[in-house]
Image 1 (cartoon, rainbow, N blue to C red):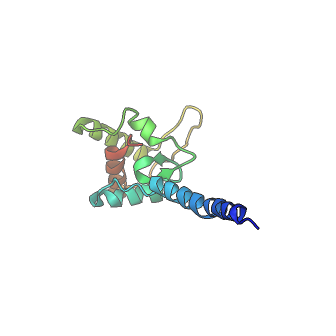
Image 2 (image 1 turned 90 degrees about the vertical axis):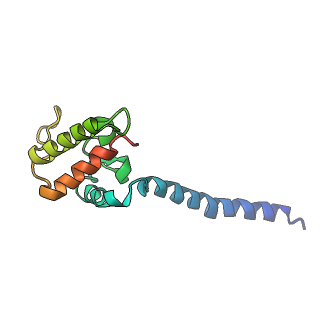
Image 3 (image 1 turned 135 degrees about the vertical axis):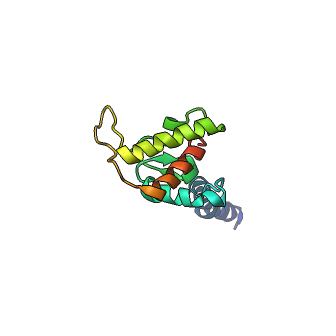
Length: 135
């Protein structure tokens, strides 16, 4: 009896059962675990993930929100800001949205005011200002 069909079947089985799922999980993890954020900005990343990530997409935080706008596209569509003026402008926008809430023309009252305040809001705004547009 010829063993060749069994060997081919075994190789295809290994490819389907082991290699493809490993590749898919590894590939998905690369996006969610974006490690381009230095340790000093990790608190801002974690606060964003916890407080904002369910609604907003931000590549640097590894979030894929499904309700609010994609902050990479909304705040810095040309890529991550590099000059201090642009970073401060984005930070001001984020702080204003956090403090006063944000409406959308099609959905009023979309983001209520005061979701986070104080140092938590500052950390989030600073993180978003530095990393919006990376994705």
